[in-house]
Length: 118
Image 1 (cartoon, rainbow, N blue to C red):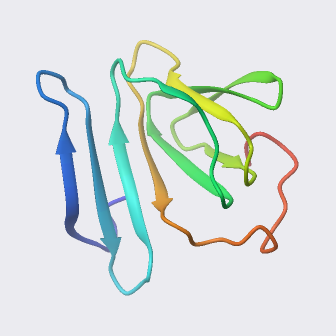
Image 2: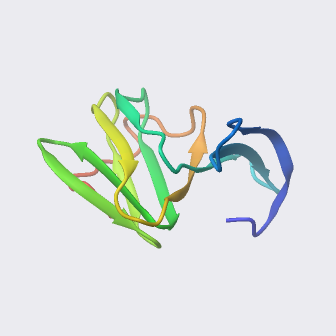
């Protein structure tokens, strides 16, 4: 996901771990992308105000959403509707690295998704 990116605007490594998160402004676009790599970190159930699309860059990102358990492996896209509760955690022995647009960028009227992944 580094193609067309400029230097990270914000970066954070979790002390004593191999986990990190950084925010990168895409060159020529008004889009900031969060990239993150987690070994043991798990997201508690939460939701977002807007549509959210995430790309699994490596490993497996597992999550619960829409009454089911799902997994996104390298190259897959995760899609979440506004206000749709979901969680997230490593889904296999290889820790996931993911990237997703950060901030408000898609309004609820912009598109509609019906499945857990695209």
